[in-house]
Image (cartoon, rainbow, N blue to C red; front, side):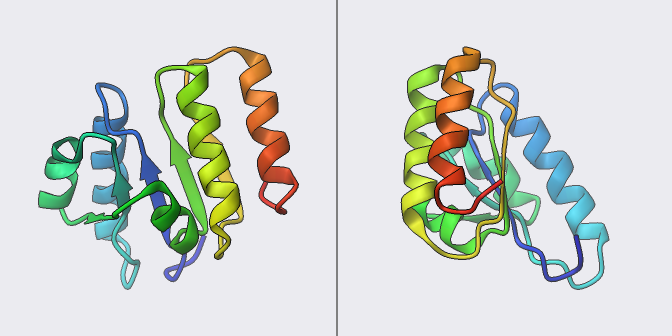
Length: 121
């Protein structure tokens, strides 16, 4: 990753919010790096990350279209598959999708297949 790599984070719940804050802190310390791009279904969950310097996105698709690397922390299979489908359909520069979700391995495989079809690892 270099200073121009845009990182995104979707899912700022109980586990995702602290992860996003730590990522934004590391990004802030990197000279010239763009701020973390964040989105959550409940927009207020992004407030702490935004206060720390992250940038709020309007949708999953907006994060996926702008980010080279997208971290996803969802709480169930359906949400992971929804985020993966939106990310796959968004186009843009997305290269790597990192699921940190605690979900069924079959859901992870389905999400990977959706993204792999679009060239996302």
